[in-house]
Image 1 (cartoon, rainbow over the protein chains, first blue to last red):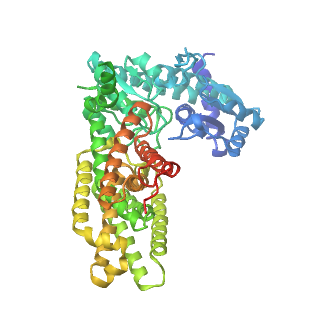
Image 2 (cartoon, helix red, strand yellow):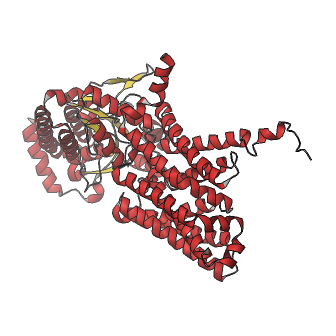
Image 3 (cartoon, rainbow over the protein chains, first blue to last red):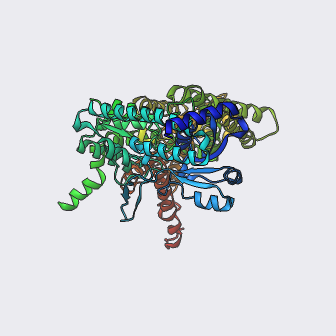
Length: 296
Length: 294
């Protein structure tokens, strides 16, 4: 019996049983908002997802609350990015003392490492900035959901194929947007440290301003460093997280000749109604901001 | 020759290379020009803490302007001015009509104003950007802001020149001024208006809290160098200039936030003045001097 006919039989059985009731949904937990979106795309109505680090929140400084441990204990699966992104997760699962299964969605991905100034080296967890990696994420999620809920196999697979097609066209869209930009202008200065995979996958040079701290208020030294570097390397666009004062951004733009880019979403989605409510709209928003700033 | 080059590299070339450095310097100096002399009068009238109280009183007005129109120069300035004037007027009224003294009246109204401001800000939810109201950004002075700072300095100096004689009288003998002239109340309110104006102009560059520093610290330091009023006015302005320059250049080399660095420089100059000031400096006490011949 091939997959197709077994699928038909299963769906006939499902029709006889009737639709899945709301309280019979598979309870799973996702570590951060991007995974939640992917799980909802694949799982559809059969899965109910709880998110630990929600939209607009920073996973790096997440502080687990007791209710998070309860959620984990009550769920069947916990989806993690891995690669060191959720350092707090291991302890959380241990303290929840649950038999919940951990799914690392990045398994099968070729991870990049990143080097620090002090010679220290670790893995870069921001693999989702390469759309091809998200296809692997989606496949891993599909596999895990089927393993825990074999009855939903057809739904999950259908959702996966549909979503995977969207990912392929998203990847093509990003590539064609970048190709439209003259090659010598495909570089930006940014204090975001999340775009290593994006740089490698799509050929945009991501330059970090040297010696500029991202967390504190910009000093005269920081501003001078950025202006000098942008001028000497003819960088067309700047994306800076910690310069939130539009007047300062304007000042830098005027003096360096570069454009100041808008907000890039790196580690978390925006709220549902925001410009980056899903993974796909997040990547589209980012590429739109990037091309707008890099275009001559 | 080499040391000359090094000196140029360290202290002048940053200003030649970057427009934002020149703007920061001009802005901070314009602020010192108006705020320095006002600080001297505040100190002489024993109103040194009034600047601080007024800065807190201005905050809610600026916050309200921010909530209405975002980071808008016009709205935040107008809001700050209105809040400051209202507090000054109400405090003046309470002082003249009730048993409360001026310090008590001012303290009560600035506390009310500050609490109102905090409530207003929290109504909006996000207060991240409002940090700019508290700490300003001397590196982000655009043309309108520079014009505001320069206008405020001009208005302050002209008004001080007009009010100079009654102000001096108020400082040395307020009762005498009240008996010989009707201008006591006008002088007092006009002077408080100048304090408000300078603080409001200052919060765009340094933030409400730090602009008090550039107003008061140079005045205190000047007290240790000269005992004539004219001398103190000039010295306070000069110390303001020096602090602005040193603060900006130190922030450039050391990578520290610019506004606080300027105030720290003023603070260091103040401490040095206490120690080695030519008038009333602590060290002078330990140097034996000739007794005046009888």
